[in-house]
Image (cartoon, rainbow, N blue to C red; front, side):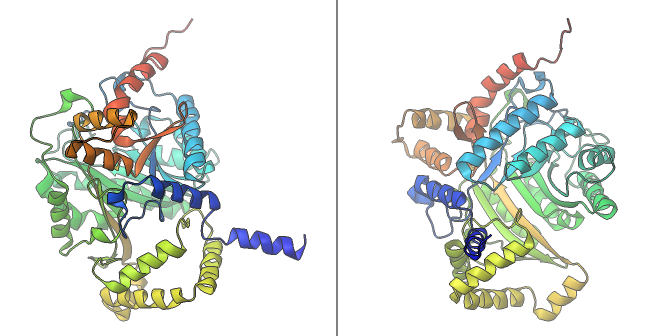
Length: 467
Ligand code: SF4
């Protein structure tokens, strides 16, 4: 191989982002409504958006209230082959439209109803398509199941790292050991036991894990959030995501009035639990009416934001990152290559050294100073914690806005227009390989799920007649 070829390959390999990602980012930015093109917006600058599966295993074995699943979801058989095939097709479309790397949720019904082999095969298929998968679960499964998913027949890991989002809240019904929790606190031993399984898996087999804690919020449990934020991260969760209930799914599992919880109510509880402000304004994902996110670190038991929206040095660092490291994949890229990419960036844009230096000094001081930080690092008491609120929209709000969008009509009514803006800026989409379209999750659940599950019910009936 000639020197010229080697240099050219090195040049391509050390670009911050794959050109297909850069293209997808540009397309995303172009399609965003003006209202969300703020300096904080990461969609189209750094992120292409999150992805989720649909129509692949709609069944669930709990009986929660509220429930987002359509009424036919539990009449569809779990079928591992169907799941692997359809997820693979959906991931292929994501790869084509959104570039080679993204985060994708393996979601539908309850993921642990898949056989361990089908679950593992699906995660591997997602990785093959450059997706970093996260299995969404109610968390009510045994350690044997987890190990069977992660370890192959030879007892060695077939998955070197896993991500799970476990949904725990007191609105859920039918969990083993606690079928009708009366408070969020009563579920804490179950939250801890879930995280402990992954700790043991890491110790025994070196399997890395990322755990998120998710929960639905209604008027019944909103006041308990602060307490959860103060206690749950220490169990081993690196993300806490709250979803104020939206009127979607099976109407038989809904009670009047419980969905009247706003994003601000939840955020106020989060800040109360953290004992400080959580500046979500520094980085936006899509429309802030849909999402609020604050990235931070726990040092000992205190949480500190990675970015303060009103700190000039932090905002300069964020803007520099958006400008020069847009679309860079930090998860699937080997560490040595990340370092090479960063070095190249530093050589090409030496101003970054000053920007990053100033940001780093500010961050260390915010975290309590170098001595505190080194001490906490030595004791492994520095852990990431991201706080998220994702407010899905009610089905009767989404349906009319989407119907107009399908006709290419921009709504005149301000509230319908607002819904259209949120859908255009959606950061959580689902792939439809048959039509080649990516659909906002709100539309999927509000408009498309009922028909899709009706079809699946015929394709995968619960009772299989054998000839
Ligand atoms: S799924 Fe709905 S609430 Fe979430 S980002 Fe998309 S439009 Fe907004």
